[in-house]
Image (cartoon, rainbow, N blue to C red):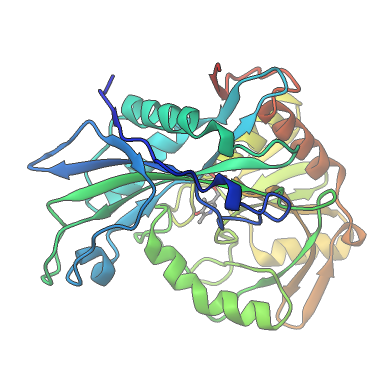
Length: 357
Ligand SMILES: *Cc1c(COP(=O)(O)O)cnc(C)c1O
């Protein structure tokens, strides 16, 4: 256990939060956790008031992007206390991302302890409405000041908290997605499996163009043949064809190992569904759509949990999925995962890290 020192905020900002219009990542709680890496080791870390950071113009991350992040949520449990969903997975994934861009590893137990102490301290920031939650954003960045391209020798690990709204005001809203045929996000041997700024930078232009055309996201194809499906950029993607749940495998290292992806696959296997993690080409999806065997397409990610796809555009083709309505599997995955998160239903895989109050 790390010995985390706490400095309390003197004047809370909580009364300036627009609780009826939280949106996503707009408001930030009173405290943050911060740990520094110097001379080859992380310090024990401090909880301090949320405030601006001192950054030199020569900060290496501003120039070369040596930074990684995580995203998870804390929920008010219906049985009292706070439920954090699968934080150990985030701690481990952060270390995998770290490895790929030469950031030092952070102890998994200390990660969870820091999270627990911070969330407990700022518990009043957890929204009370079903569907709403406290989003937790841990991140690490190089804090050195230099212009030569090399890994930083010093780092900061920070956790910030943001009360967020339910992604969909009423039920699950099917979205329109465009298959990206010009730009690429990641290639084998690249950074696609890391939760790092570079992947988001690579996606900005395609995302903007998609928005202008009325789509909410892009679906990325593999960067070499532009043939196989990768992911949606902030979500993994799943297809239901002939009652089989199909999602791209993690083998190529071009997509992120989503924790919601893992949760959905685990539940599907529990339920005896046929599950395949394999290559799936856009042509296979088009064929299945033509034959009428493609019954559902949905994205998976922490923010929305499940995001049904109602329309998939590929070049000149518009594939309407399940009449633009939410499918039965998407609904069942959503209900089960959120039920576990709010403590309404049993948690057979011990996904919940509970904080007693
Ligand atoms: C965060 C993220 C996801 C979703 O992962 P979850 O752990 O389910 O939230 C998918 N793809 C990318 C690129 C991501 O950054």
